[in-house]
Image (cartoon, helix red, strand yellow):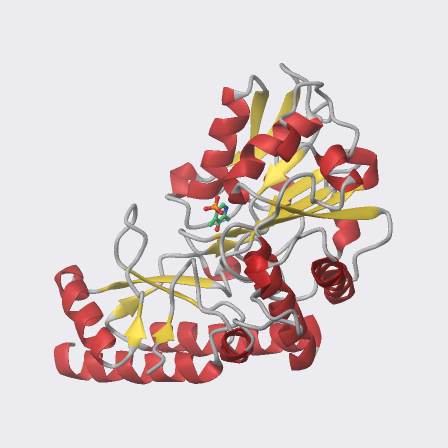
Length: 360
Ligand SMILES: *Cc1c(COP(=O)(O)O)cnc(C)c1O
């Protein structure tokens, strides 16, 4: 029996994708073996890699002036790769601190010897809000501006793309990529760990403008070096082939759903349903300011916090899983990535009403 999985990551995958992968697991593409057992340099896998990049480019309408890289090390690897590739030691960079993930990115940039200017810091709001556009204290001499459009743990999302003039904008889109159309040309670099909205863990997508490819340091480790990886089709070394294979199927699935405009409509409907239920209740509360509530990650609390374990126990009994908040913040959280159907949110909302009726 499949449950409704609200995990923040690794997260739900489309059932159709899993079924296709299961059907061709032992004999992929007529090879007589699984996709995990073929050479990444062979014809079949090379074709897969080309299709995967072409599909992602089409979905996001990525301009030709951008390179698409498929790297390892997760989004956390990019916390290091971005400073190493884009900034010389001691360079000035801007970071917007809006939650746990931006804070980790900042820590890594500082560890690598950059001078980090906090152009915004929402720690004071306990990460329940984002800064207003006019409140950003951007340094015009910084090498890049880094921010996290959607904070997976706090559930806050920027309702706008920061305007950074000539300074390249770098975005950690791990938990929001492919949830709706974006204008890639607003960004110098976008990165996203796969295990939220793309596929299995082990893969990190990087979309980088070609002007940022020449690395600022000569000692960037090869597997993190954008220029070298771009020159070798992200295959300087063995890629996580199964993750690539599933990501390619997920991109095909999104295409078949009608692309990102269709995903956006579905995701908006899911988020409105859940926030509507939270706001209408006397028992549940969203800690996040209304203007920056995430479509993808919805944290909420119970009026009586001691009921959280009972909520989780009863929800699991109804096949609604992974609703616990992140261990650093507690409470509850429902992640509503692309592969979570509207039906799952409907079931969650029905359960929440019933739970409130009995325990409210
Ligand atoms: C999950 C997540 C990360 C960390 O991803 P890893 O692949 O585990 O390194 C970083 N940033 C954001 C916004 C995330 O949601």
